[in-house]
Image (cartoon, rainbow, N blue to C red; front, side):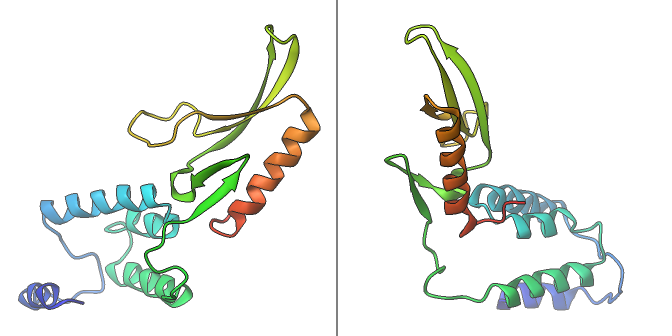
Length: 159
């Protein structure tokens, strides 16, 4: 805990094992942190922060402590943006929110197109929307989808 947070918390002398009150500014800060963790792809922290002031403060503290124990600082994960290469494109992992598949008949070439779509129909505020990879073969599309998931597996949990 930094010195400013420590000084502020020492002025708050009520010690309970329940949920302590926070200011509106603190609530807004937590809301912004939830959005930031979502955008950065830190979903475990996002889920913990979403429960702040729903669970006991000590429970939130324990969950965050456990996350930090389970994810020690290393040179490999220290402030580095993570990218994958897929179909001759370099994609930042934290920008991927959804991956879907679709198929349409292309009347120009008179063939079915099998697609992998990254971030379909997301709002324009996201940096990557509607990234489409087209394949003329169903099995090839599915093979490439598995390849994409395998590459992402190193960075995020796919359930």
